[in-house]
Image 1 (cartoon, rainbow, N blue to C red):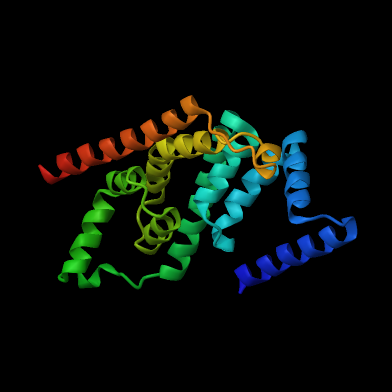
Image 2: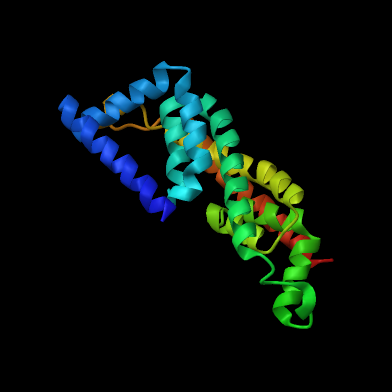
Length: 217
């Protein structure tokens, strides 16, 4: 209900603003990009939007790409701050609604044993899930629901999300400006694009190494 209410406010606000200013969708996007990039409040708004993103069920990948597209490489800093804030927001929601549904009174079941192992190795578990690019919010809500230690969750998220954040921000930054895209002048900056793909490959490689090391114990 909260998400529906927020979306109603956003869509309604956009409709009224575009009607009053006689803006097309392309014109609205250009205006938004100008506001976001020409003001000190732009990055703050982006971080706030990222932090509230779980309540809107808005995909993290799209916002991360937008961070690179709008702000360039400096968007990495804004996205890291926003993504960690959104992770804790979703974790808190998951922990609140999860409650004691998965209590330790049933440790004899296979599920409870697996959950117990995840809780004991919270940092490595979350870190691996970040490095293999599992759905961002799924990991956040699941960690809260399973009552994984919040300090380990935050540390693993901050570290494990860095390769993915940098790669997707660079990917967004490689597509040029909004005006170029709207005019059909689509091109990709090769060095930035290749760097993005390389970071994704490195991240997956690190996760595979950690999984093999974990399995060897």
